[in-house]
Length: 204
Image 1 (cartoon, rainbow, N blue to C red):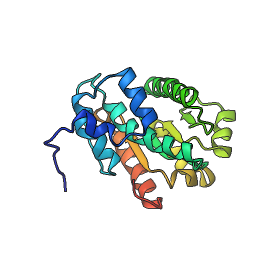
Image 2: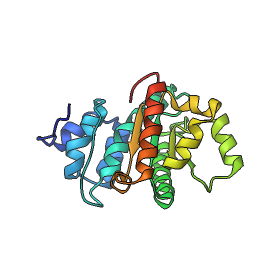
Image 3: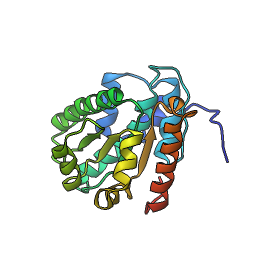
Image 4: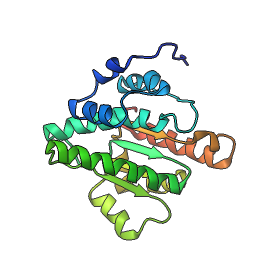
């Protein structure tokens, strides 16, 4: 059943669910949450499937990643971060995927350095341009956050060894979904996600 969010959470309501390191980083970097973030971040943190429709630049992608990174950082602090994929991010645009990786790596480095966190949260990108060496490294040491395209997701799901790394993912983020909704790429992505969810130990 689809439910529409009708109430925005306050800034402090959202800060209350964040680990102190991320709360401090967010306050220093952004100051306050955008409208879509006040609707979505806590819902995602609570494990609800969430669709965000909001203008470009309003913080949709960060809404999705904030809850996920919050959980990963908590595990890293406890020394409980396992060698598996926790977050699957799918976008139809290779350039956007590379931007997302850069935009994640910078704040993650800042969080490590400011808080002396030893367990790095690994971020990996898989597109048609990814080298064979990088693909092999993903298999040996799965990134905690895996960024890919619909086509590459279909390929890795056919890899018996690597696809097992995806089966325990806790978050699936699909960005720019409007550009896929009415074409064959969207159909292929829908089939890939259905295959993945069917095989997962925990439904995301």
